[in-house]
Amino acid sequence: MSTNFHTLKVSELQHETEGCVSVAFEVPLALQAEFQYSAGQYLTFKTIIDNEEVRRSNSLCSAPHENNWRVAIKEIPDGKFSSFANHQLQIGDSLQVMAPMGNFKFQPNSSAKQHYLLVGAGSGITPLISILKTILREEPLSTVTLFYGNKGMNEIIFREELEALKNKYLDRMNLVHIFSRENIGVPLLKGRIDAARIPLLLQAFVNNQTIDGAYICGPQEMILAVKDELIAFGLAANLIHFELFHAAPVVRTNQNNEAKVAAFESHIELIMDGEVTDFYLSSEGPSILDAAYKAGADAPFACKGGVCCTCKAKVLRGEVSMDVNYALTQEEVEAGYVLTCQAHPKSSDILISFDD
Image 1: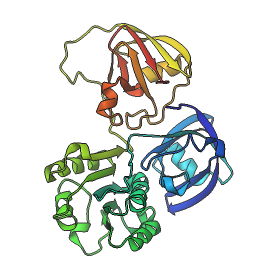
Image 2 (image 1 turned 180 degrees about the horizontal axis):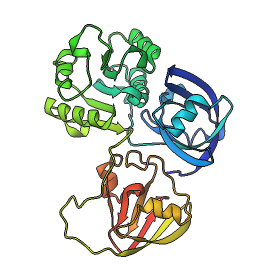
Image 3 (image 1 turned 90 degrees about the vertical axis):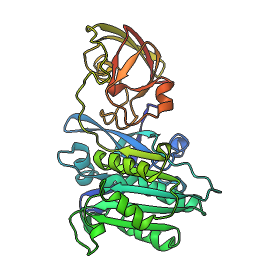
Image 4 (image 1 turned 45 degrees about the vertical axis):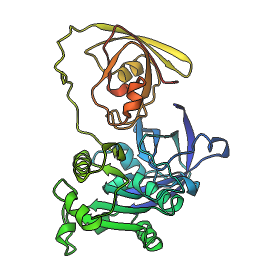
């Protein structure tokens, strides 16, 4: 996994809604192999705003076959980077950008004949439209149902593009808009996408169709509700894929009721780009990522909430625990990977690598 940032120029800006801008980047030919991506993945950005370094991750809304690198950035209250992108960023400006990454991804199979369910709310459509375009183009025998929730019609991101796709693939794409604040005269489509509404939507728009895979993106509460209802509907958990944009704050607790262990100091060696940084960290101190950064290591990160996997590293020696994990697969965890923004020492000697 490359942890290097590259300077990319903004090649195009397009305001998708009043509070959401899509940004396309010019990727030099020499970097295009490194910047190849799967539908659903994201880019991590680094820039200076008001004399402060800011890092954020945003999902690619372009599809791999489009040979384009475009993200959508929705402005959020007090969002330093999202406000900067929506109001100050200009064509020709440069940002520091890390190569695409992320486990929320779709790998097409041209001979597959599947029915996929996509569920998104607000800016959660960003990775989903990349997946949607990939399915429709790369799996000509497959069909898609998209449930997309917004406050109202004017809040729909990629409204024209979604309608164009629906018109082009009339027999393969079912687009269902649900509005929480706008009444279009259909009670089922007025409200939030929640545990009460999902079974009704499935009954009305999926009915007897088999769901072969589900991709969900949006607020944490919606994702967890949809996931539970899909399992109740009969879909296997391993066929349900989701991406959180934001997670609820975590308070460290003894969730496993383990015996209380006295605080201890751990010696940590961190490998990045072939160089080793070592430091000491209390078991009750900050995360390994924060401690590494304080020790002078320019370790990669973005969300610091366990949502993306920008800070992923592999534990080669010792043992750590994570507060939360919304990004790594079970296979990655079993292989020794951790989210360093959520990791704390459980042994006195730890070797961890960003290069593996």
